[in-house]
Length: 299
Image (cartoon, rainbow, N blue to C red; front, side):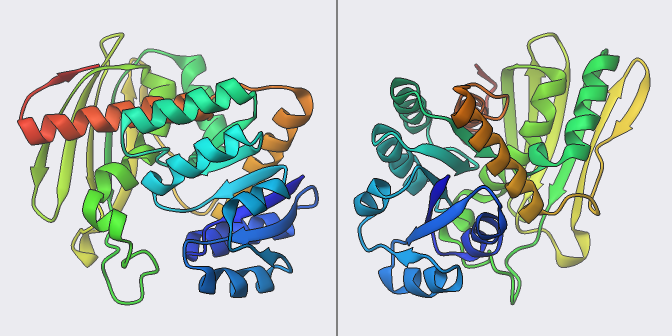
């Protein structure tokens, strides 16, 4: 499958570009960036062509891999879908429900394959863990603490304007929800409050009565970084596996495998597709309203 890479930042290069260049069934043929001067060195690294015009790139590929800010991604994804290109998108899908809806509508109308790269959901050890929890059942709660500290010297994401503006809710929140939702089910109501160091604390009621709470920030004290999610149920406690498993490049390679299989087999639905990506955006948008207006928000 011929891929174009949209984006020239650290994640685009070191994860998506590296995975595509190494993948035996993918051919990274082109790179486009909002700053054309940055596209050429990225393209040169992977033996691809730098495109100053995104439509020209779309004309030469079968699929695009997107690693740009979510608001930029949504517009590009809609454009690529309308051009009949398969999509491998990043999370969050968009920053508004309206934009997420537009992407889903474009994808469905075009009949293209489209996945959202929720990193953990393409790690086999996490998928096996979630499958085990679903088989066991009777989980009624989950607590998650995701405190990153990216605004430190040398951090490749510290200069990200959209992360600075939208914070952990929108950057780390999708990771947490991608694990929560397959086990506890749809969210019916959400509330959220701010805390010190740009922390957002989210409590959600799920449709079957389960509840979850998440504490999220990108600006934790450097000595207080924590990443953990724990489920509680009638059969005990289950801790989501941590680091040391499948790295992000291999996980992205698994996403490429899945996209290619979907495109070849005519499949257009997957538990990690744009429909799920839209569900995550709707929950995040509701939490944003809840924290701003200091009230519970029904979905």
